[in-house]
Image 1 (tube, one colour):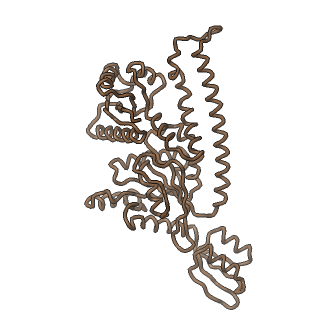
Image 2 (cartoon, rainbow, N blue to C red; image 1 turned 45 degrees about the horizontal axis):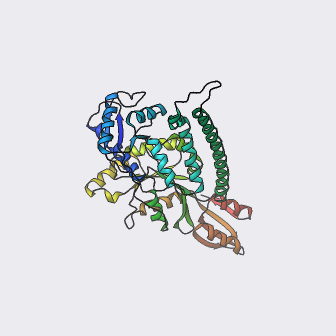
Image 3 (cartoon, rainbow, N blue to C red; image 1 turned 90 degrees about the vertical axis):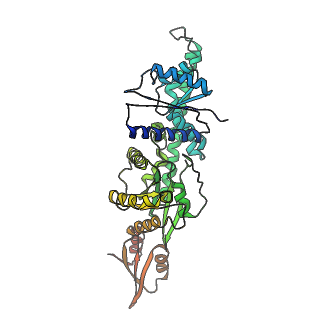
Length: 423
């Protein structure tokens, strides 16, 4: 069932036209989140204050106005763009008689409906329980007439204590299960050791899944909505003869991503930390792409991978007017050298990214001279299978090859008795 949901936001101070534009962008994003959750926005309300009211977030007059708007629109839910304290949420619900959610709870709700794998479901449940724990008193407000005390504990307090214990037990269980999942992932990563790995990161709906689908040519779920993909997906991308990359699509980031959610998804995001390079996909057609880039950089820093090699991939260039694209690309190339500009929706639109990935892969495989006996056909076959052979010739009883070889294969060839010289 669709709910009618007005989105409410306050700004920290009276703003200029630029600040009003930013506020409008934030409200538009909140509306998209509501749509993703299956709701319908029927109104918006903003307030410019120096600081939020500690008890009701909004001022007294604005709370009264909110109540009037709710009555006029027959809305059933109020969603705030900022995170509310448990007390603020309860006080607003008491004043308006409507269910109140904040941005963090809305995002958690979306994640809960989008999670598909057992791991993602556990991660979302953990985040929801950690969010819920300090807000239990608000959920049990219908029993607040019972007051606890020594010898006179009422059913309300007893139920709260029971719920807290059950939730804490469940949190401990989920954390242990996620540790087990993390160990299993470590085994999987060990089996892929030596392969060139890259991870797609970026703001939600920047087009990461479209890029993965375009490069792999396989079936990848794509939808023009926020958080269309939660579960990481890895595909092997063929770049050239004996040269490929394992490319992983990861969950998208967003402004004010709930801290509990970031923490619970660390197991999945460790896939990012094991990558050789991060592909930061940016929606060039979005008016606030620079702000979105800052958000992603901050989240990457928070999870400890801010210093990894990164290639900035500016996507959706097909949506940018031709008269604006060239000067925009020139400005970005000066600010972020090495950036590539792509379109996942046009033929050949991902070729610049494919060439850049091939260049990155070849850097990990330096040109190496290999000398081995002419009679060693098994070793020769392995070299052709696992490297990119550039030249092959005979010198007396030896076979001499020039090939791009990674460290693992070079070590294996040396142990087998071949002469291996890099450079």
